[in-house]
Length: 299
Ligand SMILES: Nc1ncnc2c1ncn2[C@@H]1O[C@H](COP(=O)(O)OP(=O)(O)OP(=O)(O)O)[C@@H](O)[C@H]1O
Image (cartoon, rainbow, N blue to C red):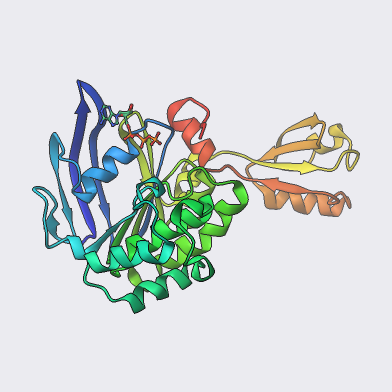
C-alpha cells in the first residue's frame, strides 16, 4: 500500500488555480521532495495531502485512509512540521516539546530524547524566541516527530537559513527517513532535493511537471557534460580536435569543452598530459527546471 495516493487534486483561491491536476503516489519509506519557485503551489499541495486543506477536486489517501473530512485515525500516524513562528510563546525548548508530547500522550522521556537527537540538549532551557534560526527549525522538526509518526511532512524546513546551517540540517533530515519512515519535504533549494530525496516532484504554476529520481530527471535531459581545463592546459585548437569534443570555448576560468562522452575526452586529455586543474560539470535539477519551463530557476 502507498504512503500517499493523490488523484487529480485541484485548489483555486478566488478563481486562481494554486494547484491543478496533481496526481502522485508516494511509496512507504520514500523520501519525496517537492521543489519549485515561490508560489508554485507546494504548500497548498502539502496541506491537501496532510488533510489540512480541502481540495476543490480530487482525492487523497494517506496510509490507506481518506484525509478529508479530517480523519482522527491519521493524527497519531502523521507528523506535520509547524513553521518555527508558530511556537507557543515564552516556553523553553523543553516545555515546547513536552507540550507537543502531551498532546499525543507521549511521555517526557521520548520528548527529551528527541531534543538530544536534534542537537538541542544544551539549549533545552532556552526560550524558543532566543533560539537561532537553525535551532528553531530543529525544534520544530523534533516536535513533528515526537509521537514517532510513520509519515512526516516538512514544509521548507531549511527556509531562511544560511548555507552552512542549511547543510547542517541535511544529516538530520536524512536520518528522519531511516527505519522506514516516509518523508515529504518541500524546498526552494534544488541542491537539497538532489542530495536528500529518493524522488523529486518539480512544480511550477500549480502543476507537477515531472516526478522522478534526481538521476533520471537529469539523465532524461540528455544534456552534454562540460569539462573545464585550467587556463593554458591545452590550446583551444588542440582541444577542439580531441575525440568526442562537441565544442571548445575559452572562458576566464579556462577552456570549457562540451561532450557526451566524458570518459573518451578525459582519456584523450590524460594521453596529452593535460589533466591539471580539470573539473567536470554535469547538468543538475536547475537545468531540469530550465528545460521544463524555459525559465531560470530562482529560489
Ligand atoms: N489562502 C490563500 N488565499 C489566496 N491565495 C493563496 C492562499 N494561499 C496561497 N495562495 C496563492 O496560491 C499560490 C500558491 O501558493 P503556495 O503557498 O501553495 O505556493 P508555494 O509553492 O508554497 O510558495 P512559497 O514557496 O512561496 O511558500 C500563490 O500564488 C499564493 O499567493
